[in-house]
Length: 320
Image (cartoon, rainbow, N blue to C red):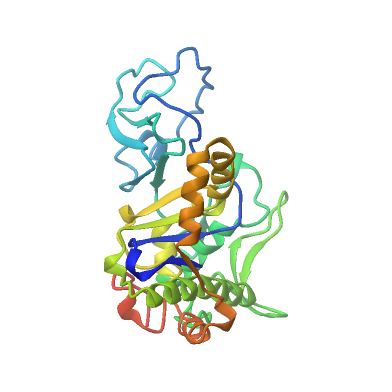
């Protein structure tokens, strides 16, 4: 974690995740279309099915989060004679002065804990499920908490859900039942404990940085999420489990793989190199392992969302 010297503090927070992905990279010229772009016909939509890409009224409201010059709005379909015959479409624009820009469409939890004890899920390419990705695990943790299947310590509640089973290593929750083409997928108590420790490490680092610079959550102008993992993070779920500060979603920007982008920029621009050196010289390095308050903050963050619920006023858990 890094912070600028107190007399030069900008109320912005950067959280780095180790992964590689560039979202909406390259140049763009706003509303200009791409002529001759081939299109693959869409499959038929079952009656009553919520297709979020079509932005129809059957779907829950979508939160649009623009970053780095991306600009997306939902408009009436200007051409229903093409492959997309829906009434509403998303108009996405990106502008040439922002090499990295785009939009996050937050559609809510990918896992829906239904009233009958089942879990609804989707897979990439409708392939048989084989496991859960990192961001999916965080979403699962948030859903288990809000539905009251786990308590604030992360322990499974034993009074009540059809998906809970007892295994050799302890309690686990079944996300996907086994079938002929895939095995059973579960999340175990050990998985949850590891997830809580991981998110606690992230938030404790953020808290140390903010405390050291005397910055409160309401003082933050922008929270930057860098790295490929951040591009797929559900902001609301990350706040629910206490991994990110409880700030309005529009303050959180996904900036992609900034390390590679910065390295390329420095190699191609002497001015960029000078600016990088100036920024580096104004940084203060915090060694978290030797920091006096880090372990205390880490311990406090090992609850969902935190031992101090006043830090997360927007979070509501299923049962206390």
